[in-house]
Image 1 (cartoon, rainbow, N blue to C red):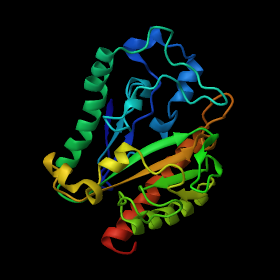
Image 2 (cartoon, one colour):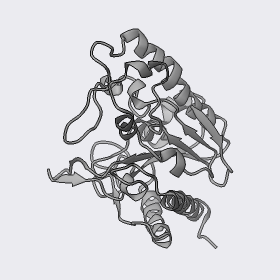
Image 3 (cartoon, one colour):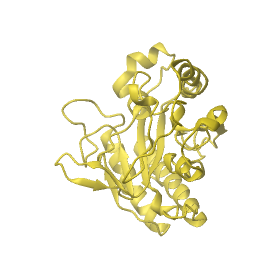
Length: 284
């Protein structure tokens, strides 16, 4: 993984946990083409993720070697197929899938260090902090809404484990960040996106409720567990998911540099404004 020290403008740790399509020492056993490997990643997130926080942590291995945004006990962490539509593709050549010993190797060398770094950074803070999981998704069907309607990826989905199209909790679990903060962030982010000439349609907790990183690193949800790891400060978390059609040609995968720069700037400005307004009073 790559750890990029931030400017410290806001007390936020960013994770770009699906940014890589590199299989490292396992490359020769991969059945996917180069293009399919890229599409299986959250391509471009290493360029759009903000750099103004405490630190930005960027993976340097494919999610196929153990999805960093899944619970460590999740049997689906080591996937056998990609997300190809209309047909998925086998990730590994026949008979060359990861062995149990290799999965343990990946866990010890990729998964544990990534999460240990998040814990270390949070434990070193003296005041409240946030964790932002930074993701993207290609412009295709991402699942069904709670009403059973098929949903194609929207420009943006912000998640805090809340109720669908709401920042507030559902009846089953607490949110990962305060609902009022997510609502404020969404409002300001939409304005910043508009300033940058980008699509500014934002949905909340639509299909995507927040993965393991969002669920785990929140004292609103896991205060006791985080204290056992030496984290004694208030921590809130949220997930950002954006449509790759904004930043890349969907056929050629060519990046659109000005859109990439604009997206990073829009969110950087938005969360800075929202944090200052929500936690320290109205922006002057």
